[in-house]
Image (cartoon, rainbow, N blue to C red; front, top):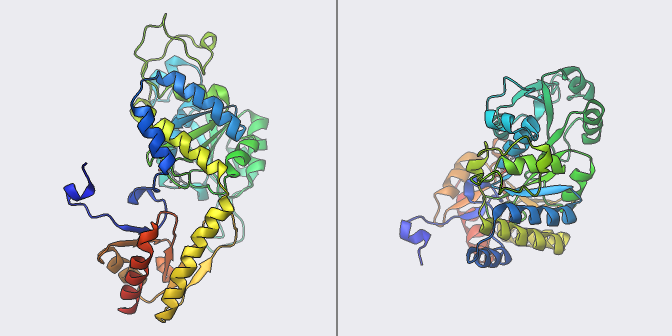
Length: 391
Ligand SMILES: *Cc1c(COP(=O)(O)O)cnc(C)c1O
């Protein structure tokens, strides 16, 4: 046994959600079992990922799918697949892309730190559109014709970051991509739940979609999914797998050997390797995620939040439950004076508490119960009362 305690690292109360900085989501017990089982046996990883691909296809409606070391890795690999296709010479070049079309068109208001993952493949981003709503200068966001006007012989793909209210509409962007033969790569890392998004984004006709495995699915923190067209997913897999074998013995299963000029060497994704244990643990977690009643899971989280709300109310602190869509994660918002100080005091409280910090500049602390353990609820409420009241 070796624990956080042996390193003198004190675990926190995570009331923030399945965020990477705080270690992602709690691992489902079924995933832990699968991890342990898988650890005792050996399997060829290419064969395992190909079998995984069939199961993911069955679950999501995608032609193919692989497990990656996170959604960010799925974005790098997805972009690498679009850039190189089945050409081993291009795979070998990456991240140097002078000799190939290398631009991904992206709406300016969809840029974020996560698009570094796409740029890491060697792609460059071609920004389009203006967000006049955010700049306070108007009512319009990026429009589809602006993507179209950016298409040139340098265009490799379109990067689309999906949320409930991303603009322009995904269907319009997919139709444009189809019309010009330009593949669409979607970042949907955090867009689960609802579980229906796993199928919906594939059904949109997008070529590749990236999801996190360590967020609401409850798989290992360092896992993700890349779903989509078989040829592209096959290319992504080739660029991730270890390639140390003899060409005459090598038999790629997900890719068509006759379409490959030769056997690629280790690709740009070799550093993103996923262990057999992680692969099996994520598969077990997805199986649970798809077989459970998601709205009931969300209702349980809402119940925890309303208990916290009641405890806070008894201490004279008001809060608001925000839960517009019953298939998505409910949140409790606590307006407070000096929100940054309260947030800081919570982080140094005993026990330490991390709350959602997305609305601090509006003076609001946010509580998300998805990564909270049941035995932590009372300590959380008490910490909130201590820190909010002392401001
Ligand atoms: C979390 C997130 C990622 C990164 O996902 P990982 O699985 O941690 O690699 C990428 N894009 C968005 C929008 C995210 O929310």
